[in-house]
Structures are given as structure tokens and as C-alpha cells.
Amino acid sequence: MRPAIALIGAGYWGQKILSRLHPLGVLRTVAVQNLEKHQGLMSQYSDLRWTTAVEAVWTDPAIQGVIIATPAPTHPSLVEAALQANKHVLCEKPLALDLSTARRLADLATKYHRHLLVGHILRYHPAIQKVRELIAQGLVGEIRYITSQRLGFGRYPLTEDVLWGLAIHDLDIIPWLLGETPEKLHIDAPAPLAGQLLDTVHISLRFPGGRLAHIQASWTASQRTRTLTISGTAGVLVLEDLHPMPRLFYYPITTRWLHGKVPHLSLDKVPEAVPFEVVEPLTAELQHFLSCIEGQATPQTPAEAILPAIALAERLYRQVRPEAAPALPYFVHPTALIDEEVEIGEGTKIWHFSHILRGSRIGKNCVLGQNVVVGPFVKVGNNCKIQNNVSLYYGVELEDGVLCGPSCVFTNDKYPRAFIERRNEFLQTRVRRGATLGANATIMCGVTIGQFAMVGAGAVVTQDVPDYALVVGNPARQVGWVCTCGETLSQRHEGLWHCQRCDTLYQETLKGLAPLHPAT
Image 1 (cartoon, rainbow, N blue to C red):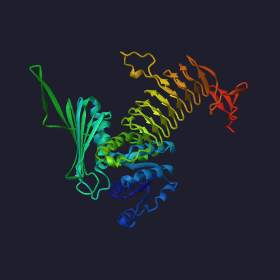
Image 2 (image 1 turned 45 degrees about the horizontal axis):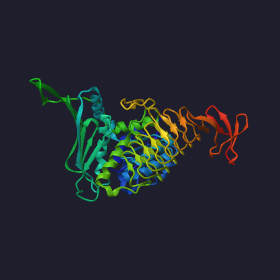
Image 3 (image 1 turned 30 degrees about the vertical axis):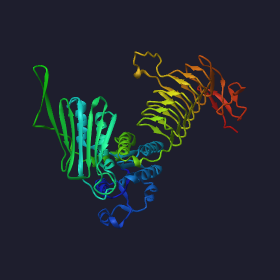
Image 4 (image 1 turned 30 degrees about the horizontal axis):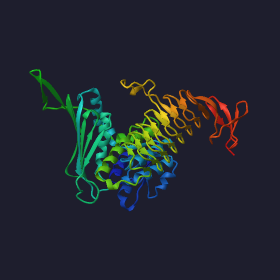
């Protein structure tokens, strides 16, 4: 038996979902704000349960999946409520209007072991999938330039900016096709024709190696246009995605060398029509959601896969609307430098002359002292304290509650040479929950510091440190055990250790020590 589904929202897009989902026999409930507004739909789909109480969806144990097709600002609260009710979710794009909220929802889905898919419908488009396949086969050669036009006349008054409503599709698809994240991006947007929401944007993306992409999205164009052009050294692919049937063309490029020196390019004026499977993307997306709930498929558009597109859209929106940037939930000193694509948790403080490099994630309620360098792509847990003059290089990970004393040193290259590049050989160093690293301690790469272990000041750690171990010296050697509270333990019996301060008893294990009962 197929899973029962609830639909929240029956507006323009919600009605499209309703018409595709109803024939599948899985739709059970439709939740809307106003029943009178949807009397016609209620008559047409009289076998469904219609309600204005969304709580009825959360409390219905028969409903396994929820599809959210409401205005974008309402998505986060509805997704969170659905996940907390242990429902699988398919949410229309965008999942959220900022990266931190989207990341939180993705983490919440992981916590509750629920699928959270986002309605980036182009990933289910058979022509787009064909384009990706042809690019991988090398049909267009080396891609130099991608252009997208997504134009039409919007439904006024607008409910969301054209950046989030239209351009977000290309901010997802273009990096997905190229397999790269743009290193530079820029947006231009004229003043809206009516209201305050952006209705036209021109976006430029620059990728590593000089590849470019240009996106034009507008809700003020008189004619509907949906084109995607991929230009490469061997040919050009053009997708015209218009009703009733999208069309995909390939224009081969021929290169001749005049006098063996001057390249002469010629483009075939008669394109080749590229066939692809005829499947409606929305129907494919809904079928895929059902298959994921049934455990027969792996999500194609999980929230984690969509986060890069939301990050790009947020950065672009801040360029054109800097006044809309929310107050930061963390503190950064004016002399500190924070790169793009960095996540910083609520309540964290970053002090003078520190630098957080791209791709790094710092948890909640951390304190980073003066002249601290983190990254790139370093993960720091919650409630960590990193004191002055500490550098966390690529490959270092701190779990929750780690203390790094002043000027302690991490490495990531076991055999460093100034003239040899070994980026692909960097070793991972992990400092586990609650551990303390003393001032001027040196941690050689590739080791793991056990949870609640303590490394003495000036120690040089060259091998793994067990849980709750106390190590000192060069090279560091174990001289005892420490309690969670930091007190040195005394031996009670063979294999048993006791804390005089908090009366906690520990037992020796293969990983070090483990508490036998909580502190009194």
C-alpha cells in the first residue's frame, strides 16, 4: 500500500501538484487557509479531506508525507512542524530565504530520520538530465560559457522576489551541471515596476578556470522565455523549455587552422535535434518522493544538496539589498576577517585580528581569542574556547567543549617541504569532546585526542591520547588520568579511578577511562 500524503497549500502551484497527485490515489488531506476560496476545488476533489487546521495533518498517524506549496516565507515553520511530527517532507523551493535556517532544517531532518526533499524541479527534467549526460560524455568539449533566460510576466502582486522565485533554479542547476561552485558572483537589479519586491535580475557567475555563466530572470517580460545555452569548444547545446514540448538542440563547432596558425571556427547552422525521454518533471518529482518514503529510492534533491544554491542566492540578495541583512546572532570584532561560505553559531564571539576562512563551520557559544585562524573547511563544535594565537588548519576538527590554550600548535603535513605540494596528503586531526590542550602544546597531524583528555603545557603529542588521559612532555607521555571536572584522579582499586572533588568513579576501558556513575 502506498503512503498517505497531505498537501498544504492549493494556490497556483499547489493546484498543479493536486492535479498530478490525486490520480495516484495517495492524497488524503488538503490544508488551506480559506475553504470558501477553494469551493470549486473542493467540489472537484470531494473525496479528499479539506481543512484549515494544519494541526490535523501533524496529528494524523496515517499521513506519512507532507507536500508544502505555500508562500516562501512560510516554508521554514511548516517544514519544522512537519519534521517534528515525524512526517517526510517535500517542500517547494526555496526551502528558506537564508542559509542558516536551511541548514537547521536539514539537520532537523537528520535528527528525526525523515526525508526532506526540496522542489527544485529542473533536476527531475529529462532534458536537463540529458544535458548533464552529454556534458559528461564530452559532446560540447570544454565548457566556456552558460547563459540562461527565464522570463515571463509574473502574477502580481508578487509574493517573492524574482531571485528566489525564478533565478534560484539556475543557481542550483548551473553549478550542478559544471560540478563546481562559483568563486565570484555579481547581481544587477533595476528598481521594481511596482511594489518593493525585485522583479528583474541579471546575475554573473565566474567559476574556477575562467568559466562564466549569465542568468537573466524577470517577471516583467511580455513573452515567456525559458532557454539554457551551454557553449563549449566542440559545440553548443540549446534547451528551449516551452509548452507543450521542450526541445533540445546541438550545434557542432568545426575548427580549422588557416596556414597552420590562425583558428577558424564554423558553427553548423542546421542543429541536430537531441532526443530524450518524455516525462513531465512535476510528475517525476512526486513519484520520486513517494519512492523515497517507501524506501525504494535515494533522494535526488535532499536539503543538503540544495544548500549551495541558497547560499548563492543569499549572497546575491545581500549585494542588491544590504539593508535587509539581519542582525548577526554572533559577535565579530571589526578587525576580524570572515570569508564567504562560513557558518557561525549563535552566541559565538570572534575577537581581534582573527580570520575564518571559507567553508569553515563554527558552533554555538564559542570564544575565539585574538589572532586565531580557522580553515579552510575546518569544523569547530559548540562551546569551544580557542585562545590567542592558535591556527586550526585544514584537516583539524574540534568536537564540542574543547579548550585550546594560548599558542598551541596544530600541523597537517607529516613531512613538510616548502617546495613540495601535498594538499592531497593532509592528515586529519580530531580533538574529541571536552578535551583540553595546554598553552604552547604541539599536536602532530593524524592523531586523535580522546574525550576529556588533558595535554599539558608545551607537550608534543605524536600519537593518540586515550579518553581522560593526562599527558605531558616531549614526546608526550601519559602520567595519569583526569576527571571531567579537570581534577587528577587517584586509584581506588585495580582498574578503578576516583575523583576527590566530584566523587566520580571511573573504570579503565580499551579507549581509556569511562565514568561508572554520575558525579554527586
